[in-house]
Image 1 (cartoon, rainbow, N blue to C red):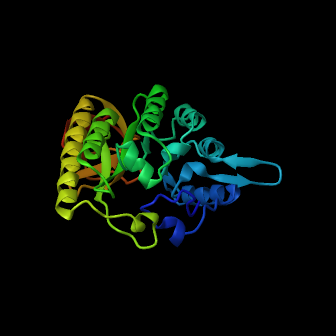
Image 2: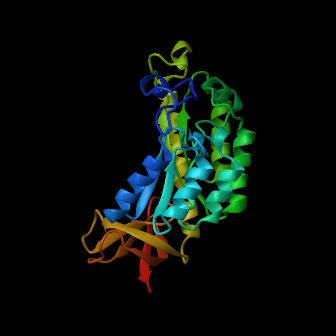
Length: 287
């Protein structure tokens, strides 16, 4: 799907890409079939707000859970991912579909942007921190092994020290394995452009660095919990550091590096995790 209907106050997407337009189901299925014939092993369903997908045909109507399930059933050998999900549209029906099918990856990108209800209101995000945390609880209820990543904006208009501390507190509660983290920057034509960009640049940078430092701590803690576990890994290619090592991704979207030289990218193998860094798991191939 293309476009977005949410009009978050800091975002230009609805103005530059227009309103939401969902592709026909058959068009999506046809494209996936073409990719499978070309020997692809993983696909990602994309949309600015993919879980608000809605396509009506003469005799049927598809929303995102139904589309996702149809794809999972039609392509059982493909790994399926999707991005990005808006928290307000994450339904229990969708979570149940994810949990039901093994070829739907156990990872989700769920942007929160701020841990302060007041800031979220100014951002026009249409959920509260409490409602967001309920969505995380729902995901982990059905998929305890799911990994959750997010987006975070530091220094949005009117953000106070208390708001910033609330964001750090939310990060600790949420336990993100990864975050895309940014300083707020003015965008002409958005609703936020009419607000006072009143957080000094130096303070934005300081708050962003605190968010980054905390995320590094959380990522390392979560990666350490994976040591000793065995994961299916989809091989993607050679490690940047050595041609004697290759890397791939788990269903939780975590990168695993392991000793190997001649494995064809696209191969799915099992690896036991032996060590980790903040950003990477280190593994050993097992039979």
